[in-house]
Every structure is written in C-alpha cells, then in structure tokens.
Length: 409
Image 1 (cartoon, rainbow, N blue to C red):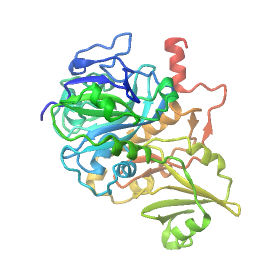
Image 2 (cartoon, rainbow, N blue to C red):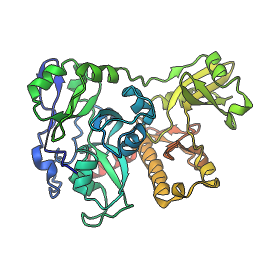
Image 3 (cartoon, rainbow, N blue to C red):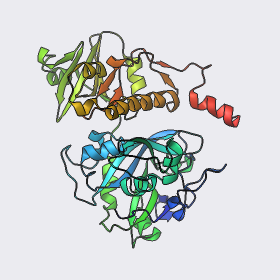
Image 4 (cartoon, helix red, strand yellow):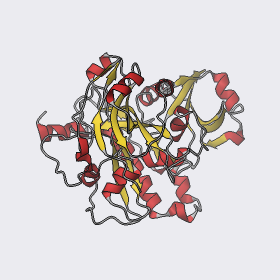
C-alpha cells in the first residue's frame, strides 16, 4: 500500500485571503514516537479552539477498495449513510471509482479540553500497525500518535479481529470564522502541484477548508462550485409534516405497515421512514431531538401534531430493536463477538455524546434493549427519549466535572 500522508497544514479561506487557524504540523504526524506534552499539538489532532464543543463537520475520503461504496465508507467513518449518499448525489448502491473524492459528514466533538475528534471504530482485517491504519486505511484522517493514545494496546500487540477506537481529524469554526460567515469546516486532500495561492483562488467564498494534505495519489479535484453546492444543500432542520402526508405514507396506518406498538413504517417520497404515534404531548421530546445530531442517536426527520396526537417521524431502522435482534435466529456472522462489541461501543458512544457534548447535557433514563435500535448494518442507535431530562442547574456534566478537577476551571 502506498504511503498517503506526506505533510500536513491548516488552511482557512475567506474571500481571497488565507491564514492558518492551527499550528503547522508538517511531517511530525508521521512520527509515531512523539510524546503528548503539556501543550496540545496538531501532530495528534486539531486543537479545541472553536466556539462550540460539538458541530457538524466534513471529511474528504478517497475511494479505494474495499472502501468504495456508501455503506463501506460510512461504516469506516461512522457517518450516516443516507446523508453521505445525499451530499454526494449518489444512490445507496453506488460503487465509487478508485480515487473518487467522497464528502463524509461527521459529528465533531471536543472530547477533552485539548482536541477535536470524530469517533469511529475499526476492526483489523489482518495484522496492521498504527502507522498503516492512520496513513493508509484512513488516509491521514487520523494519526499514529492519536491511535496510540486512545487505545490500550501497544504498537506490537495488534492482531486480526481486534477492534480499535479511531479519532478522526475535524474541527469546529472559531468565533472569528463564524463572524465572517463560515458554517462548516472540511478536512480536504490536496494533490501535488496545488499550493495555497491556487486553492485560495479556487475556493474563495466557499466553506472553510481546515486541513490540506499533500498526497502521492494524483486525482482530479472536485470543483469548488460542486463541493460548495453539495454542502450548502444539506438540511438538518426537522420537517413539520402535514397530517395528510403521514396518513398517505403509512397507507392510513395500515396494519401491514405496523412495526410494533404505535410505530409504523411509511414511504415519504423515495425514503422509508418510521412514524411513531403518541397520545401524550411530545413537544419536549421534539425540542430535545432537534438539538441532537449523532450517529448513535436516532435521527428525528420530522413531526406533526393533529387533533391531540403527536406523530414523530424517524429514520427507519431495518433490524428493529436490540431485544428483537437478540431473540431472532440471526446469521452466525451477526452473532460474532465483534458485532456484539460494536453494538456495545455504539451505545456507549451515544450515551457519552448525550452526557458530555450536548448543551445542556441530557440523561436518557430508560436505556434497555427495546430502546436500542439497529440499522441494516447492525449499527446501534439510542431511541425513545420520552423520559429523558436535561441536566439541572446543580448537576455538572462529566466533561465539565473532569475539567474542574484537572484544570480548576
């Protein structure tokens, strides 16, 4: 496998000007023996200098087998496959040509006081090193140092089947970037022959580009207009549906559309979604879910209120609840320990997000196998926020408690 990452630096584009927003790390990202000093270093990940602790961010991943489909790339990066397909204007069944630059939406969090990261997990198919995982598999979107820091295994202890926690490079806009109109930051790959001047000219008035990397692979860059239009086209606001739309989608809540209890599946345009009918006031749940955006938390697509009933429209989870999945005679490969560990990590990541990276923090209060849903790839998402509560004024969320203990802030 050819080595992808050669050098690394940070770019910030506004109109025709460019300036650095993070320290230049150069080839230090290739050095797996750098120690984490008292001061944060961009040789690990990007530092937490943004206005928000959590935000939507984007990565550029160059398609390469076996990661050349919507599903395989989304699984590799823990990105929403539907959003990945939509932003790249492809179907869920598209196979990308090798070298195709794929835009990957991720949830970026300041997990510690030092670094931003988008979390994913990786199961080693063969014996690999932290260096090859960071620079070949993830194409420099992670670093050897950060993998060593966030996993309990030594550099010589890796073996096939082992599951690793992989922090991906991302960042949230700074206060000055937001003031200048920047909405999102994008980790972007640059070919040989490109330079700061040419990139600034090509991408003026576009979204901010956080990371620029020189790579050996020479492929044509997507045009600035194409990337700008695709990212600008993302809509994350939950839709307020008309009752007639929901009634038509579920075929008037037909028994054949019933998934269980008061939940039905329905066809909304080209999408199959789940509709939950509630007799109680769900406005609090709607307000909460509209603030939440994480791969391991069920996504609220929209809602409707009609004659005292609330109708919540969610993404459709093909494998139902974790309880149902465990009770079924699931194929052997799905019952492997690796799959079970992945589900456990998904649940843990979702809870960590709710407890640490929402503002205010949330407590679910009803975690059980019925409220954990599985998508078609058997990735877990936390659902049913009926009993969830915001943290009260006298409760300090985990990350703030640790910051007070460690830094006295």
